[in-house]
Image 1 (tube, rainbow, N blue to C red):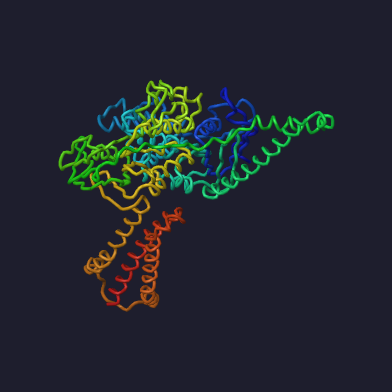
Image 2 (spheres, helix red, strand yellow):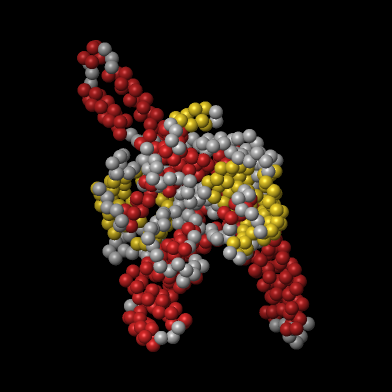
Length: 630
């Protein structure tokens, strides 16, 4: 039996129906990825499934006792307390007991009190009666897995860390269905990889919306797309879904062309002279009326954004040069001894854990911060536009039109005067939407609006801090193409692995302790280079192993038959492992591999890590058996 069944659901908010009779079932074991254009109703559908909204028509059936947990797209307002309290609140009724016990034990550890000890004993008894100990351990386990400080104050955390706390809040209740709305927003790559692995192994049923194609490819076993009030479900992974959707769209174009041709022919027939009207078939007239009504109600697919960038005159050949750059914040090193050169036309990616200082590094490279040590040389004729991940350049109270036009009705775009409404339509904002306040826009629409605002100004240096958050797949593809064709210099901070692979030509990797390393290529190129470095260190470790084992050498003796057989086959096993390593390294070194088998890159790198361990164990065993042999 389905966990949740939606039947003929309708919902509208004063305009065209957001849901026009949609039906969907979620079964146990589904890892369903919900796709759709920005504004198509993805977040609304998640709220409806989660029970926060009720449909205007249709029926929602839930399995009795169904437990649903949800991670929303935006951070909730007014949420206070320490991290333990926020996470434990996802446990339901026992959450208050867990929070009080945690605070009492924490207080007792700092200052002994008979009263506090008595309260702790009472809480301990109540927790035992409600199975609270297992729940307490679950909270601590999730906190440890997500690297969260239980005593940290939620309001003082960064946006990315707050996101992780809310993710822990959703995970800790062990729900029957976990609903995630853009779960990878503001998470660093390591956490995204952990989340993929955690969900794949520990969460049986999950419904999620994501812009991260690598995340969808790794996790989804079903995909559903919202399109013009309808929903189309596919029982396949992400890559197969993309192929099937393209075939459906081509079939729709053909079908609509035939429909339009027939309608035009019938319109010509009905407008013929008196002779034709005398012999007119009334059934044919009724059929024409039906065709007209179908044409009137037809909803065209939202077009693709027509994003254009204004490029100013070229900057100097040198954009920026860092020489032994060092910077720290509150005594914590952000950059230590960084030297790098950015030339005109470079496309530089910046990656690293949350809080490692990626935005700070951007500001250093732009000359907005003074380094503590070292020198920052800036090039000439620089025209910089900056896309900030918090969208602070948007005024939420003003309309879309007012944010972009800044009081003007017209703009000068690439030397031509354009009306602000026409310009916004290129970014998929209808005239009605253009007059709406920014506060009612979805996250993806706000990102599109910020792009529209920034691209009214010419530039030769484009700085983008997490631009992919909340963008739909079509706009993401278009932005990729735009950045690849941009003749200026690009500085990009992103946790979207596929976006980095497709856009950047080199990558700066921050470790969080001040170390910054530069690698050629994108995310997968960085992985393969690190794997190669790791493999190169193994021979040294293998040579050192016999020296370390000499003091532990056992007295020489004759090997058993089984040990002798094992020693005989070890050279062949070591050779086979080394051969497989070489083949995998050759695959990773081939640029075409990343184009045709992107989904296999992580698998290959994981296999390489396993082979390194197997090889080390084989050499150690060989040395051990040889030492026994004497």
